[in-house]
Length: 228
Ligand code: DC
Image (cartoon, rainbow, N blue to C red; front, side):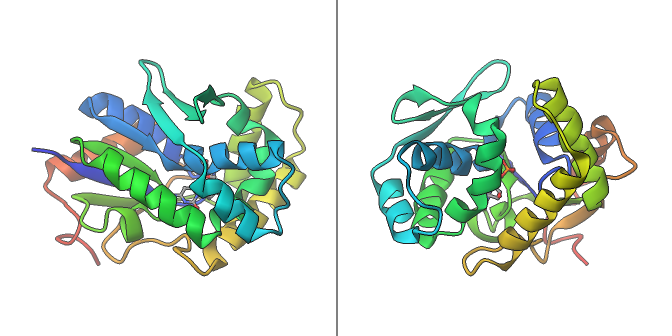
């Protein structure tokens, strides 16, 4: 039986690490939907499109093919056939992606592709609107949260590992700014679905979060039954 699990929440709450590990444990597809918005942002920046021009960004989305390619280690993302997996993590992309993700035409296109990818079988889908918009009938919906300070600390260590210089305070400010943009946009704002299970991850390791989610699955604590 195909199972759909959604993981939503703000940047740095642990979604990616947890989703990837969960998908591996369940041997199912991992859908990193943020990677798709980031990939389109790479193309928009390359083209010199202004982040204040939603119409141009929307038109670009209609002319762009973004693909998530399953890979034994992670997942690769391509834009019109070009592999941009590494580039999507560039800080410049992180700073601008919320402007791309708030364009309704962009979201419509992404949702279409994401639902199609979810049709193939079991999936762990990570993003901001997985439980609310893309997979409203998911079997289990999880919303991960953590304090902005803890999230900035995690992002800083990821960036440092990738060789980027980091300024913790600036990162925290950027995270707050991105949360604000993601949570207040008109279309599909970042939000927990009414039937999502909320987990605060400040004091939990990624493994502990994965175990909790697996417990929820095994205990049959599926969305809609344990909400509230
Ligand atoms: O999870 P992430 O940091 O890779 O997400 C990048 C951006 O994309 C983030 O600012 C919110 C946006 N996003 C979104 O609006 N909807 C999704 N399903 C996934 C990401």
